Image 1: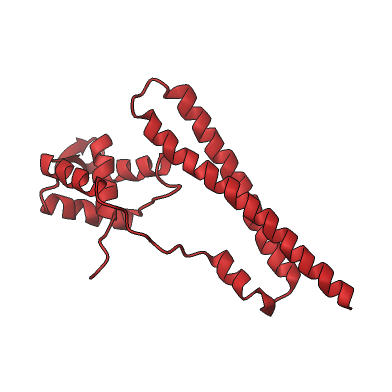
Image 2: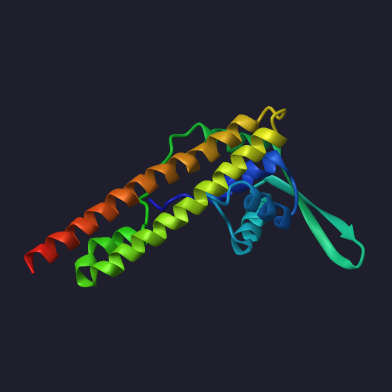
Length: 189
């Protein structure tokens, strides 16, 4: 059984919040879902056409002065029903692809300093992501406190914060382990 394309539901969800053009959808993703779900223009536009073909969205052309027409997409009642139906289905487990773990699994094939450098870089990335997520959280609490849907946005940001904190703990533990291996090997020599 082929895997279902979840991009359809990402776009239905975005259209339920803010109808707009493919460009508007991409901008919405960059400001909201890009930390955990992103689509390229090459995925967005064909999927919008498919949503219209399936009667889940409608489009209308909007004239722009000095520019080509832009198409605005709006969710239909049927599209909202499809989204709501998907939202209550259990999630499918997806195996994470993690290049760092793959490299560490075979880390005995390179120098220990290479392995340590990989983990240090990954740690720094998570320090930066943690700061980014905390900034988003502060912005949401400050600028969007009066919005009834704020809690849902905060839930996703808090996931990112907790994930970064856990990964920072793992990085520190892994660096200690790698350094203990180095110390053991130096003691043998």
